Length: 293
Image 1 (tube, one colour):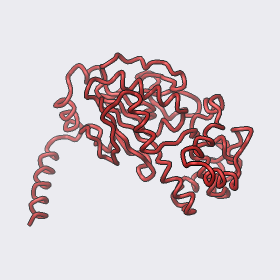
Image 2: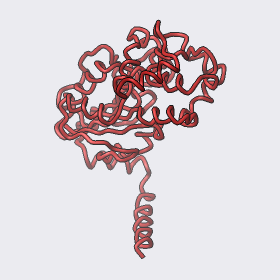
Image 3: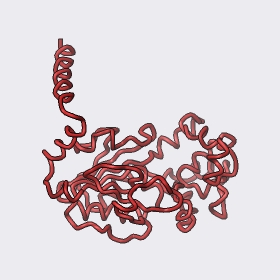
Image 4: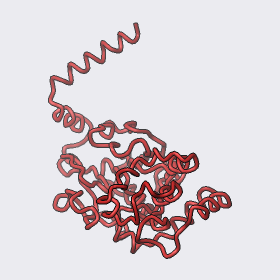
């Protein structure tokens, strides 16, 4: 009976929604929650936006050769280098929302902390900041259990055209799972890329690191071998790692008091629950944390 009642309500809601064009329905949601000024001036910011395109959101990204053709914010967004450590060119206490997805793993902790500080500064009181990044605990489990299927991009970067484009030494399916795991959070320390650190970590050395050091210290040692200047050239590589605990600590250090783990499509903000625009990147390997000013 309860199931039938739920189905009836769902059908009624579905009928109501189908009478309104999808774009108009979503516009009405924004218009019901935010001021005309915020909508007009696009006071919603996506940091590391790539090809993201939404009428009420402003893209914040850094245009470079690595992502040539993958960003559409050259003229209508904010061109911002996270490594610059400069303030975001956004007024204090003016933003409704800030969102970033699979961006912070491409920069070091100093740059991440700066962007977290800036997100806190620019948000209005009560505004939300949603952070999506790779969950290193999931990657580590896959490494320890020899779960190569977790690293689903292996096949893609085994194609000669693809692995050569990103400067790998050989097809990824010829690499050990240890090196694939390492390359995914500290690329320059891995033996996989042709570019990178002068000192590379072997499979046996990686195992020894995690046996002798704490989990966090082992991860930090690996990322400490990554050079910022090399990363600026190969910006698609990863040079950082994140757990729920690390993200929460850094967000609180930025000033956020209300910080909590979220999940795929589970934002406390109604507009960021729209899976047509948010959380669509790599949900199977992602970590979601949200903070409110």
